[in-house]
Image (cartoon, rainbow, N blue to C red; front, side):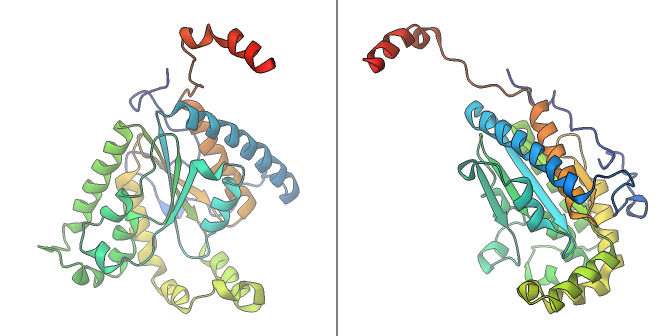
Length: 294
């Protein structure tokens, strides 16, 4: 029997954001530890973990009692797309869904801020991935509060709205967890200098020009405000049923290994098993085998 949400514990990691509000971005590393593997060895390690994740995903699909929701948030150029692609490269596409959330449409604005992500939540047996998510409503909207005007809220008090949204997010995630969704949230922590270098690469390398957006560079001017918003959001919403992991993102290979290891460890902690065949069906195996062999 698989574990319930009550029994499940998030994978232990030095990158786990504590549940007591003591997380500080200034103390969170962006670079890998000195003993991290070389790029070549790191790729080998990642492949081994990805192979293990592939097997676990098959059991998750067959077991069909849990869904998995992976949420990725980061500053621009931190490597969300590449990490999702690398970590999930071995997973059966039929058992995985990726949704990218950008500027809300008019229809989405006419609903509450959790609506557009709620309707894409993964069903049991599948892995759902949010590339950005409802957390944008306490990140970019907090840095640019003028966006709230376009949302036509029935009442608006900027002194309380962020705590109210944190309340809604915590309740939403706890509801999903109670109903079988394993939630893992990753903040890819890239340094401001590394982001600058990656933006320059997007300008200087023709094959990367398509990734460059002038608006991304403008947002760098709000870096400190974003860090304050991230620190508040992670402290307010990292909980045992929906933990945040602050993953160093200056080294892409190391970052992907960390994410992949956390996901595989989390799936192992669920105690997943292939469904057992009932006695009546099993009793007819020999009969069916003889029929097929003939």
